[in-house]
Structures are given as C-alpha cells and as structure tokens.
Length: 196
Image (cartoon, rainbow, N blue to C red; front, side, top):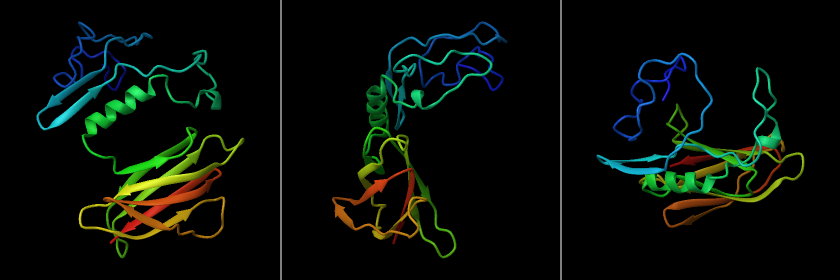
C-alpha cells in the first residue's frame, strides 16, 4: 500500500496477487492513521498460494501514540486473530512445517536453515526466547524438525547463557521428522541440528 517513503501507492505493490482496491489517485505525502478493513483472502496463483490478512488485531489497549512512547512487556502478546493468521500460513505453505515447537504461549521460536560451511554440514538452528523469564521458565519444550531429503540427524546441541556446558538431548525419529525435548528455557536457548 505504501512505498519506501511511506507514500500511498497509486497501484498496490501486490496487485494481481491480492485483489485490493487502489489506495490513492496520486501520491499522498502524509500517511494518515487508518484501520485496514476487508476479509482474509486465499488464492491459488500459478503453482503457489497467496494468503492475505488485512490486519492483525491487537488484543487489548494500544500504547498512546506520540513522538516517544514505551512499548514494554505488556504489549508482547499474540494478536487477537493469531489463530486466523496461523491457519492462513499453514494453508499457504501447503506442506508440513519444517520445524514445529510445542511449548507455552510466552515462548517464541525462530528457525533458520544454514548451508554447509567449511567442515560443517547442513544445519538447522532453532532460537527460543522466553518472554516470561521474570516470572517462570519455559519447561518441557518439544522440537520437531522435518528431515531433509536423504538426510538423518548427525547431532543436536543446545547452547544457552543459562548453562555453561553444551548439552546434547536424546533424539527420536517419528515419521520423517527428528524429535527432541528441551527440559528448560530460562531466558534464551539455541538448538543446533546438524544433518548427515
């Protein structure tokens, strides 16, 4: 809807993928606060899929907007329509997720695939952050990584500022995935899965 200078586009950047109306007749220099309206969209485009959700709905009161405003842990929460967003992503993906993490709602996970580098092979890293660290640790987290084609797990290592040694959890295979458990995430933990 906007360009890199925050000017409203005369034609949306996703035109053809998302059937949204034009946002402006000419460039509008002032970006006004507005609310996105409309329905979610699921669309098959060629061999791919497009999922469009007009807005994420914040669950609760937003901070008062101004030149300086504080965004603290009171606002670190899932949007009210988080399930709608996750269902749409699952539909667009049209396949099982490469990494799945089961844990409490305040545990955030991010996964990345790393190509072979020098003597190190292909790896998957899973970063876990406990956003409730002042109150309680996240316990008994289950991580499931889909095995890449013609690959198996060579090793899994856990790294964290919360413990001084490298830990290697036990790995089991379920279907085409490798599954391991992380007993505790106090603040931050990285799981590194190396494939052979």
